[in-house]
Length: 249
Image 1 (tube, rainbow, N blue to C red):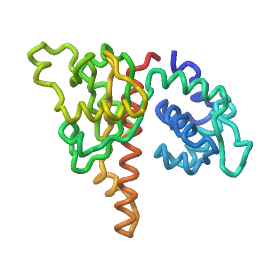
Image 2 (cartoon, rainbow, N blue to C red):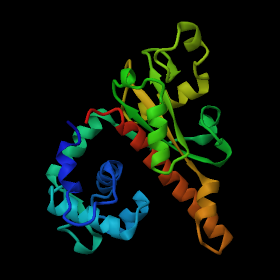
Image 3 (tube, helix red, strand yellow):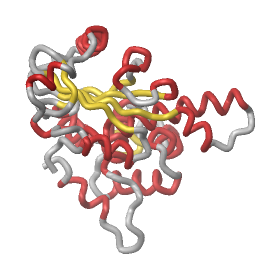
């Protein structure tokens, strides 16, 4: 249903593309955030992929499925979404209307290794019944290089951790602290959205320490800054990849 239109992007007579569905979907969000245009090097950085992969993704989005085009206003600024690309993104956003950075200080008690964490969260509409125990979502976050994912669902009144099949006694022990509930309700309200019964929130986690250790930057201050930025982008990829597991294929 959601991914049928994207299947042509993976067809190749030579080498199979190294990007995944999450890179395609996130690329569309990124293009929307930059209506004046964005180039492949900026897209590479946003998606944490190689320059060659970014070039391949842009070419296929443009030539295979006509989701993007060269900016008519300023060709140097890169590519923008076409109407077809916007229409597809709107369809995705009906199911995943929110993808935003999280406040790790508030979320620290419900994520792993919070001291080194950067977080992003997605809201997925009416998907609680597909959650199960949240392991599929955690694995999807790890697969894309993240630290993991925390899954919550809204029962119409309270937030609960994933484990839909838990007993009522077990569920009562998994209620969130009020400050976390208030945080999400406030943030989502600011974005002009309202949570409904069975809506899901997935928090993706990126690890600053791991990103720092993988960077080959000599200047300490620059290395720390880049590690924070990469970890934040990793958490966004993690949250979205986990969220995509709840969409019908």
